[in-house]
Image 1 (cartoon, rainbow, N blue to C red):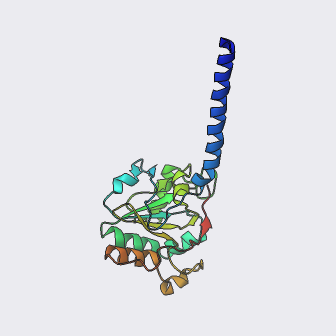
Image 2 (spheres, rainbow, N blue to C red; image 1 turned 45 degrees about the vertical axis):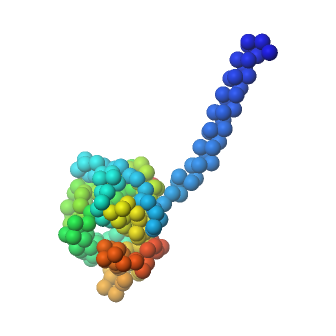
Image 3 (cartoon, rainbow, N blue to C red; image 1 turned 90 degrees about the vertical axis):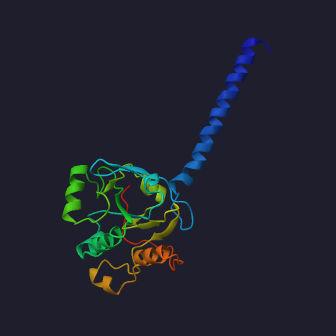
Length: 215
């Protein structure tokens, strides 16, 4: 084989290698798209900026308890829990015990629920948000997709070891009527109370109910 033939063969091999990598990346894409936070497993990493411009990474909360809540101000189920004061009461109760609570907006620009930073600060104030920080603005949906957040609200609890201990709905009643809250079993409170006391969580996962996240 002369020199031009060798070069041609080398280029062909490189093209085949590149095609193979491209195909493998395509095959891997659905797995990444459907990755999710699973109780008993390590929490997915994230790095997001809140409405006030402060960065938050999962690593920042190492050694601490962390609650994640997905939010869309226009969702009737979010209105159920915020209009009644139920969500703010939970936030206040657990942040007062040094538990971190981050509320996340994964609505993309142009979609329902999307807020510019200044708007998000106004909504945080008008909703009496008692979270540990103003809304995290996950505009590209990377954090929401990593956790498998499908609805608003969708709740996750992460322990100081970085493991997910709960994923799912806030409670056991998927009605949008706030009148049902008083008689509902609050999964988030139960999971936090049990896990912080060193006990097993009776319901570690549940079907989240609410409005779909507008990625």
